[in-house]
Length: 148
Image 1 (cartoon, rainbow, N blue to C red):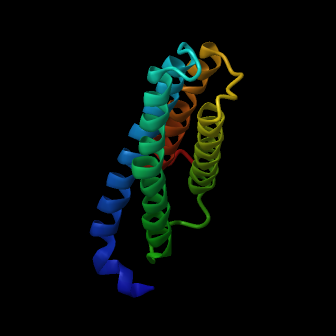
Image 2 (image 1 turned 60 degrees about the vertical axis):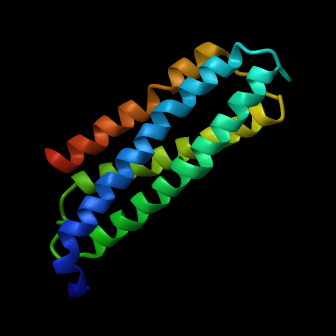
């Protein structure tokens, strides 16, 4: 795919922009869940949070994740970008897959709130809010430091 070589800086830039948007949403949505837990089911405030959560997920997080994956796969397809014998990219890929799985969990939890079926505590969502940060740390170190 040598056609990608001259596009590399543009693809990499779009990948980073997409990832920043994805991470912003991944940090914010669990925080909304923390606050949503304290609201009475069916209240006007609870209904407002449902709208905010849906918009954040559908209009920002989902498209940002899809574009992050798309541009990331284009980077991988660009000749010379990955040393296939190095170990860092395996760890990064695993962390990105785990981040995508956490994204799926956030989507499921949103449906629970939407249907007034949330059974998880505020504490649960406070702890869950740390998952994207830990995964992001691993991803960045793998890409920048490439420790192995």
